Amino acid sequence: MTKFSELNISASTQRSLSKMGFEEATPIQEGTVKFGLEGRDIIGQAQTGTGKTAAFSIPIIEKIDTKNPAVQALIIAPTRELAIQVSEEIYRIGHDKRARILSVYGGQEIGRQIRALRNNPQIVVGTPGRILDHIKRKTLKLDGVQTLVLDEADEMLNMGFIEDINTILASVPSERQTLLFSATMPGPIRKIAETFMKNPEIVKIKSKEMTVENIDQYFVKSQEREKFDILSRLLNVHQPELAIVFGRTKRRVDELSHALSIRGYLAEGIHGDLTQAKRMSVLRQFKENKIDILVATDVAARGLDISGVTHVYNFDIPQDPESYVHRIGRTGRAGKSGMAVTFVTPREMGYLRIVEETTKKRMTPLTPPSSDEALVGQQRLAVEQLTEIIEKNELSDYTHLASEMLAKFDANDIVAAALKTLTREPNDTPVSISEERPLPMRGGGGSRGGYKGNRSGGRSFGGGGGGRGYGGGSRRSGGSRDGARRDGGRSRSNSSRSESK
Image 1 (cartoon, rainbow, N blue to C red):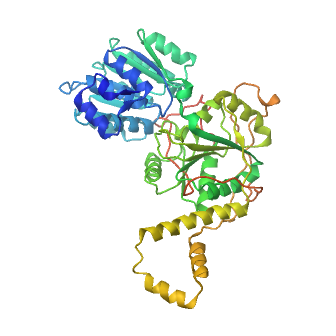
Image 2 (image 1 turned 180 degrees about the vertical axis):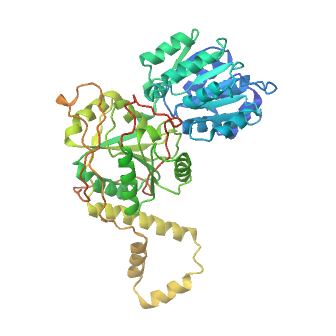
Image 3 (image 1 turned 45 degrees about the vertical axis):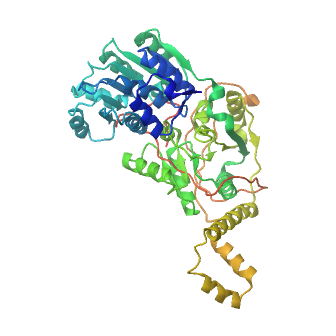
């Protein structure tokens, strides 16, 4: 690994990186910073979690002229949440340089953005629709742009932004540096590179350096109506610190997060229909450990840089194998291990094989835990909590009460009562989860081809589950995180990852 001090970057940027805890450059950072400082065009083929934001932010900060009031760098991101995260990271990296940074995105009052643009930001981060809106209003002047970044270009293609991207690219000076980042390189993205880039350097992160290596991957074969009770029991046994549960549709996310809350978990859901303020609130709660389980659609979770996730549960198998890799990549980051569990109905086993072909890794079958094993998991957590309280030794106000109880009751009974009080016993409160039709059946268990998005089914139910259990994991149960949304208020379709109702 190369240390940042070995790269040709300023002392002020090195100080900022050090404050952020960055010492060694990741492979994408090493290649991008080196070529970026030389002014070369770059294609970075890398997924979220590889450090690409810092990879393009460092050269931008190094080259910004703080005496020049023009917009000198434009970063285009697929979602408002990613735009906000990118602007925050650039701000931290450029803290000592005092460059002015602004993020613009749909859903925020445009008059406020217009006023902010009059303050002459030197770096603008935004979503395609809102950037284009400002260009048309002549409130965003791009004739001084020296660096243009397309972040998660394949995701912008999936979300239907390709025409907007082409229009924006045609609006910036042809003499500029262009950096394009994409996990995959489909035809339209290659065409952008050929049309708008000059002899780009390619910095490609091999799949073995992706985050799937240290993730234990399991699957649970179950009927649709059994899934929720099995999920509840798994949460009781695994006791994840932070978990994300992925559902296929917005309705699924709403029902799952509500059902988990009824069962006593600290859960919230995010999807594209929530207001921006609500989504940011949920994400903040998740990051601050105020909720333990984030329930999300694929679109909502895209581009979110979330650390500390210990478990990912795919309540519905994703609609394409690439989405699976993105989903489980939310855990097992920064060298830590993670666990991913995917629910598969008998008719969907062919899709499981396709996912395994894509990841080059077989999933381990997981036998669902029984109610008794779920109870043992919660009892184990109660023992840990009681032990922790004793070890803190802050009991002086309670010792006289303890003596009084010991005079009346057996010590074993007192400890058992304390553990019973701390144990969250498995909750069988009936919940209503609408069934989703399985994905279209695939023959042969492994043939390739496009996944087709299904539409919602009908019936409601509230029971199921059973079988023997599987243990292991950390402390709490939960999961819900705030997600990414389509830009502005405009309708976008042509996305296999779009959220059906």
